[in-house]
Length: 458
Ligand code: ARG
Image 1 (cartoon, rainbow, N blue to C red):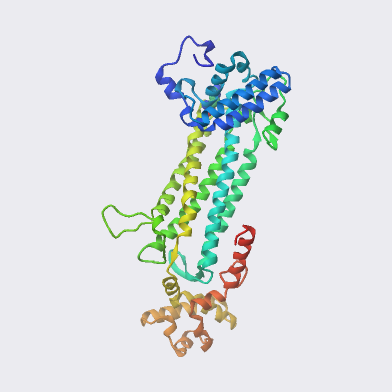
Image 2 (cartoon, helix red, strand yellow; image 1 turned 45 degrees about the vertical axis):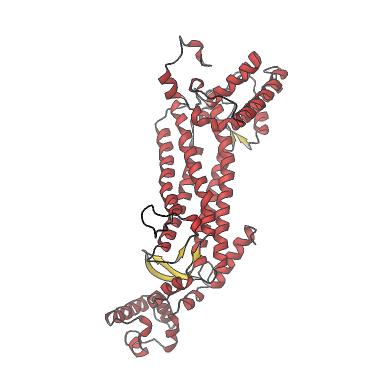
């Protein structure tokens, strides 16, 4: 008979039990469930709602149950629905009536809201550490190649030369904002919902402040109906993880392109690639591809949870049990990505001469030429047009831009002079961009040094 079986005439059919169970996946919450139950029991004892000695016995037995689950000496069955029922049943089995006091002034509705918050609070800390590790791996690569130049792209067309370090630090900035979003979501997760009961609180004189302190929550929920009904905090986390994955997916795309034979900008270490079962020559960037692919799952997890919540009348509805699998899946997926990505980044070997060669196409310096004209007093829009005409002139004659004579240049841009010839070098283009946030050698060095200092690298 289920713990809630009092008003029922018999047990649920087997198919119903299988359909409604969640223990097969929510058992991963057992440590947090036990931690919450211990705080709740201690409070019940301290507030005189249950005998102090029952509270102590419950806490001791909960520790024993935790150890049993730790070592795999605990049976999970669909008959007991979820992790809460399993632990409460084990408690009652061990302590009899004393154990039957633990669920006083509590519902599984506020209990599960608590468990998820405790769990997510911990998981966010682990994920954030992983993202930090990824940032560090990228900063170290950038630092080791602080003078390497490659073409920057817009529309996947060569645009202007940039430093490889600048390109990598762009992602480090994105990951920093991802960390900010995780920290922000954590603030709203880190609030105690326990004490809300099923939806309306309780007639018993519980001490929520006691539990809040014990579980180290900086605040408690202010509305019991809100506390059991909403999962917006979980949606926020999934949104933050989705955005992180979007960044990972873009980085993956860059790296996959760079490793293609057409780019040949770099390769990963063998340990971070896989081969083909048919084509013996293949070395594929599967980790980056899978990370790009898994981004789709995480978006799916976010959309699942938003959709689960969107039609629910207040307060708790069983639909909310479906919040867990998308949450766990997103966390597992991002953890998986973070378990391989920093190593993969660290294993990169750059083909620096190939990168420089691609960035040395004189067409990439057309903007610098226009800006040189601006320095001579030509209005930018006119300079842009003149350089555009020069590009067309060179193309029509099948000549690279830097092979035109000064006389040819002067034909379309009267303000041209001999010094403009030196603009057609990628190094020159990079070194001219020393504004804050620019791709100049010193500007990027100072960004690198700031990152290294703030992440305590070296
Ligand atoms: N397993 C449930 C969940 O995950 C716990 C709450 C169930 N509450 C209820 N009244 N059936 O949401």
